[in-house]
Amino acid sequence: MNQYEHKHQDITVTEEEENLIVFNLRNGTVSRLNSIGKMIWTNIPDKNIDEIIDLIVEKYDAEREQVNKDVKKFVDGLINADLIVAKH
Image (cartoon, rainbow, N blue to C red; front, side):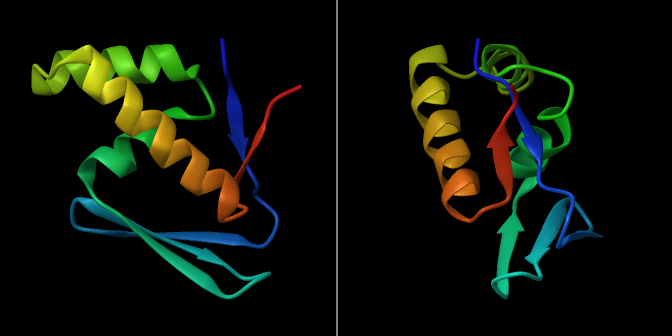
């Protein structure tokens, strides 16, 4: 059960229609999240990765195996961008 949390310090989030723009003030990076990325981002504080995958599979009637790969790759990107950390 992988669970993560946002790095609130030095992170600013702006909503733009169905997307989110995430600014990392510490390293100057900007990440644009589409509607699925937004769904993942907004659910990270309250749900584990498997629960987020379930939400996406249900909402988009998508294949679980592919969603699992895509979500894990996306989460790895958020970690590498220094936007989230594993909860302890």
